[in-house]
Image (cartoon, rainbow, N blue to C red; front, side, top):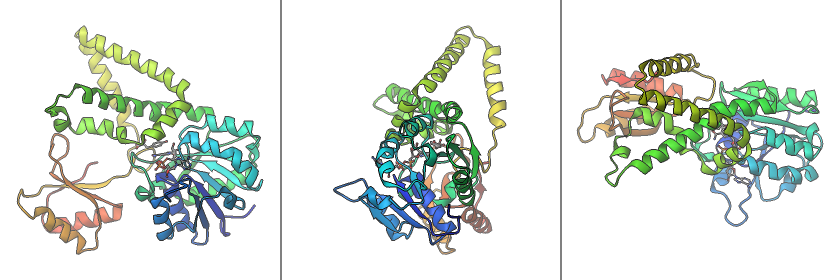
Length: 373
Ligand SMILES: NC(=O)C1=CN([C@@H]2O[C@H](COP(=O)(O)OP(=O)(O)OC[C@H]3O[C@@H](n4cnc5c(N)ncnc54)[C@H](O)[C@@H]3O)[C@@H](O)[C@H]2O)C=CC1
Ligand SMILES: O=C(O)C(=O)Cc1ccc(O)cc1
């Protein structure tokens, strides 16, 4: 087995937010790695993959899986049902020493497929516990992986040197590797990830169906609603695949959740103040104890809120000030609903350093700045 310093050839099948972020992180680890991605679009080549070639993140884009025959590692980064479909073909192509890993949000299904294909000696399941509702290479960035837990689910037959190598690579990407059993993984992620995505989607659908043609609900939707429904903007195909492949575990939790909602409804009907108080109190206590910084499934937002004068050119002045100090803005916009956020202008930066520089600069110009803790 090669060590991490050598010139690996690393393949990607599926190259969006997660595949792109991993490739960017690998490129930072070792400029010599040869990174190749599969383009499954037969007719019109993917613009994302072209961009990655132009950026120097990828060395090669190929329409043929045969070009992956000499890969040292292959990352499967497509929707979970698609990842499984590639195993059979890869088995006929790759060397037995090639580590095949995936990044899918469900693990037991791919382990079952790997075992049926007798590929256990070269497979290690993977799942970076980080991400966002955004998709595609253009939204990817190496720092996405930093300080995030990265779950690895080796099989009983995965050689130790393959597990060690992948663990080292994960660490070098800035993530924190954790080894878990595939079934345990699926129970945990059903509760903390899969169920919340269903709840967020159906809550948004409920509001959408309750709104009338004046769309007051949509207009007035406040911070709390937006906080708990951000993930409703996630990729429909990705979440359809996740739900279909972890259905049994999700159903059990969903049924318990429905009972808990019924209990809340009964408490309201019975004017049961004790129940309602306890419901909010226990939830708040647990929620407040979830680590807020650096690790876990929390996307890192580098944003600030500013009070600005409601006059022409106010935003342009700030944008110019930042640009002339080489501080790039990722997003900028007025917050019309001030129920939650203080300040009316929201500015998002690419990283913590840019945010700190902006805070310092705008502070010097006497802008009132609010940071969300
Ligand atoms: N989005 C997130 O926050 C996280 C996603 N994951 C997992 O990562 C995987 C990829 O998700 P993202 O990168 O977020 O999605 P994405 O939508 O950004 O990227 C998926 C990529 O797969 C490609 N693709 C679709 N069908 C394909 C096929 N048949 N063959 C080859 N490529 C195909 C798409 O063109 C796209 O480039 C999924 O399995 C998901 O469960 C894991 C952790 C976090
Ligand atoms: O956007 C978020 O907060 C997420 O929950 C991202 C996410 C999506 C899927 C995963 O398997 C892991 C993380």
